[in-house]
Image 1: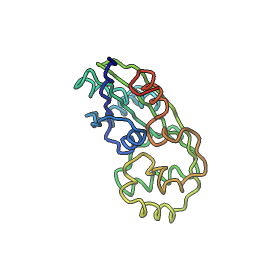
Image 2: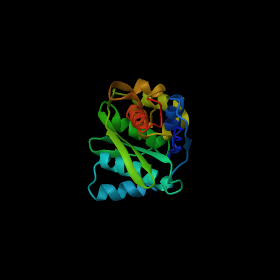
Image 3: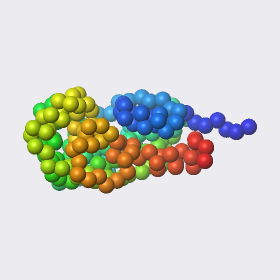
Image 4: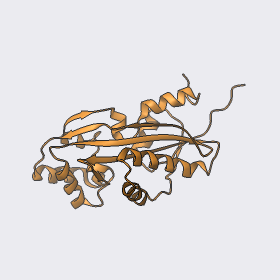
Length: 202
C-alpha cells in the first residue's frame, strides 16, 4: 500500500502565494507565521547580512514556526526583499509612501531577492534563492498619481507598490527573471522538489 503523502502547509499570509499554489493544483492549507519580519530584517541588516540572506533566513523562520505545530507536515516558507542601489524596501504603509517608493524606483533597475524553504520536523530539507531584476520606466508624478488611484489599497500589499500581474505591468520597461518568482514564490523549483519527494506525481 502506497504511503500517504505528507500534509503540505504554506506558512504565509500572502494571497498571491496561496493563489499560485492553488492554481497549480496543489492541495495545502495556509497559515500566517507569527514572525516580526521588520525586527528580524533590521537585526540581520545590522549584522551585515545581504538582502538575499535575510530573505532566506525569514523564509526558514516562518516555516520553522509552523513546523513546531505539526512536525509531520512539509511546511513551505517564503520571503521577498526588494533592493535598489543597495537600499532595502518594505511594503509601503500608506499611499504617500507608495508614491515615494515609485519615485525612488522610476527609471532604475531593482532586484527582488526571493527565497523559498521547506521544513519538516524542525529540519530544513530544501531551499531555493533567486533575484529577478526589473527595470522601471521613467514615470511622471501624474502617472504615479493616476496609477495609485487605479490600484487603491493593492499598492500597499507588496514591496514596490506594484503587482506585475495587474496594472503594475505598465510601470516597467524590462523584466529579467522567472515570472512566478517575481510574484513571490519560485514555483517551478518548488514543484520539482515536491515531485522528487513524492508529494506530487512525477
